[in-house]
Length: 276
Length: 276
Image 1 (tube, chains in turn yellow, purple):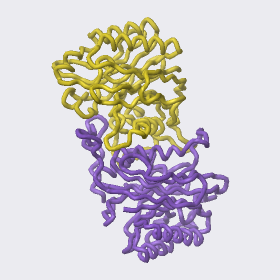
Image 2 (cartoon, chains in turn cyan, red):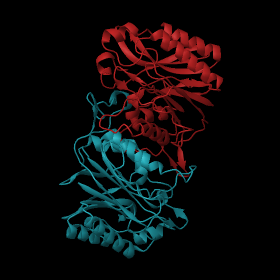
Image 3 (cartoon, one colour):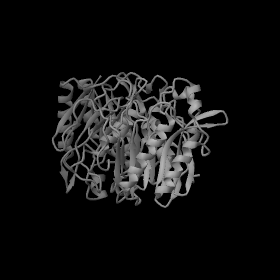
Image 4 (cartoon, chains in turn brown, green):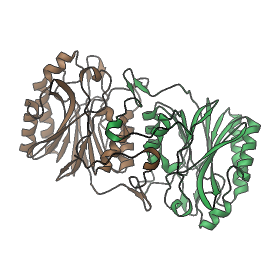
């Protein structure tokens, strides 16, 4: 299975441009053979809103908004699956969401459950995990950016049967860390993949927006915990493309399985999750 | 606070030699300024037992065994704390354990809760987490080797107030991974440290025992998630020494704390753990 992460630089507020450019990237990824394409967090709006009013003016209902419609159309036209970050408006609240679209259109969405920084002033938190979408490509779940700091969520997905977790993200440099270091989020994605036998595909944005730099370094990690191919650059728009195999990989040795070996008696049970 | 991880090569079955060599390493580490010294998993016996009978013949009661006595003596003499892997015998069962010793002698122990490979044929699993030992150096918990594959355990320790997790280990190359890769366990230690604001200090063994190679690459990771100083070699006996600061580091930004931001409503509550 061929997966692609689009590392692009949305421009704050320029939604039409961002939606169109995302479509161009998806088209290019499909030309390269991608069957599943991941776009960054808030790919249609940009990230650094100067007010809740600005965020609200850009957010859309899901799935009944123009961005979801436009991206669904390109998914159908190219016969690909897309996971893409989008600002969602619902019942007066805003959500930092991601949609899953396929050849037959809209499949579902996930609202970010762990909000980072000023997001807490703008967005409501989602109140449930991503559904696990059983697609012809494999069983796909979604996490967004700071969700990576919570290995519990990836464990929940693995126990629920997910094979791939797509991660639209807008990684920012960690406070108190040298900017020369690789993104710590790459380490977290590798650990989440290895300890759960998951493919983890992270599409980060690049650029500097209203003074906020982003980290780039998008990557696809396979079940071994290692990136497949190169990690993307820190600052360039580019596509990370990887060929992955979705065999069951929670076994880490003849006598060991990272899910079966869990000791719920010690650190608690993760609630039963059937993926819905 | 100065911490040292002793990367050494115990010899299977040569307990007197291993205990004495461990004391030499602890002495050297103390000479270098270490206040807390971590030794590998099963540092007194070696790892690749050819039978349960062999393991049983080498295992000792804890704390009433000769190894604990000898290592307690050096801890007292040098005024240091030691965390060291040891084969424990209790009530007819064997445990892959680690002891914590201090200037005043034996403080406690932990029995490995996640057993790797053939360990399941030899050892019983521990049935509780490491206590969190409140020492003058800081609040210390213990994990052993494959425990690193279970981020739940490190979360439990962090929520219980641990500041340092000492990891005696005998990392083996992961099945189906190129031997050229760095130890995946280093990635797991980094993720555990960063996502919990913990210091994670891993003392691995080196050498090849009865055909089983070990990974080396001992390291001390601070709360940022990055190794302090160099990661040890793959094959040499050496001491990794690091200066660490035990301030509270679960904050990862102005508005975020990796413990407070957990969503127990989504992936379940980790049981209340007061460290005992």
